[in-house]
Length: 360
Image (cartoon, rainbow, N blue to C red; front, side, top):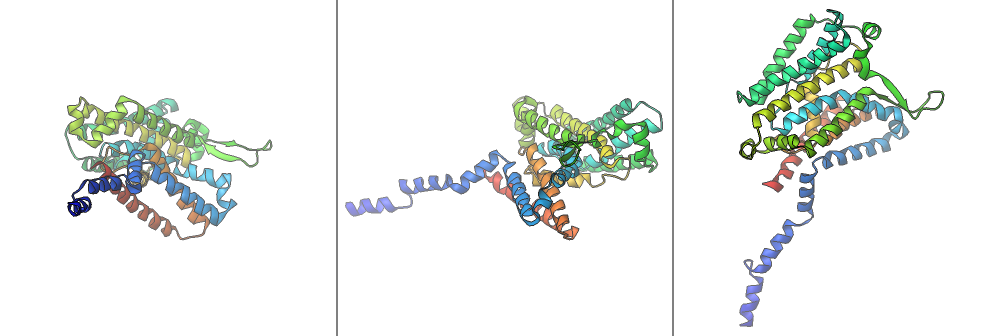
């Protein structure tokens, strides 16, 4: 009888085996996976801190100087703003390949309306913002109402907007001297100001209003996505549009609003782009769509939709900026930057797949 009892206690089908399985599910790895699922921006934040630490150790004060650190912010400002627009679309399980073209067309409209037609610069800026929003509406309508794949829609829109940009501008660049003299408002986001400088204006950190706008935009979108009904609807549509519709979410309206907001943000990026480069050029910002997707993916926003954080996108953009500046200061070939960023993209997708298993 006692022998039979001992055999029962050690059998894999006994209650002890079930308890062991439960303990494994609650182990460190599972808890880490669950934590990262709840806080997707944690991974890019860790990578960003590690990158800053490594380059700071290798370069010392050369990297940790206020000038170098604020230069990173200035360099990623445009990518970060466009990345915010891209993030909204990708959270809905879509993708927008036209963000860069919309940004440039909006900046061209602002410049051409001001200098070709003599329209007041404030109205020209408003027209540029309207053009970007209209492009976003067309994208959203085709995706939500016509049910066309976002990749195909935005690929076509990218080609159309790019061609329109060159045809309308006649490949003409409006020089920075003309803008500074006649329409300085167009260069507003490139205006710099110092923090921490002495009485003689030496030292301190240089910031631009473009950087301030980026930080404000990310914080506002982070709040809206987390705390408002519209934000919850955006995540619900990205996670499962059919289930979202059954629960009362107007999927079509939500998608159209996301693409319209994305177009508007891209137009704001176009305004900031004028301030960044000083001129209105139809050939600028051509890689913004790829750079924005890079920031989004490294930032932990899932390409499958329904999961991610705008803050993570900002961390992703900063990671690219830190690697770019750090390797440049080390004197490394620029190709090493592309190699490391490529590895980060693949690693980010692999981590996303691993994290998603916690909900499957």
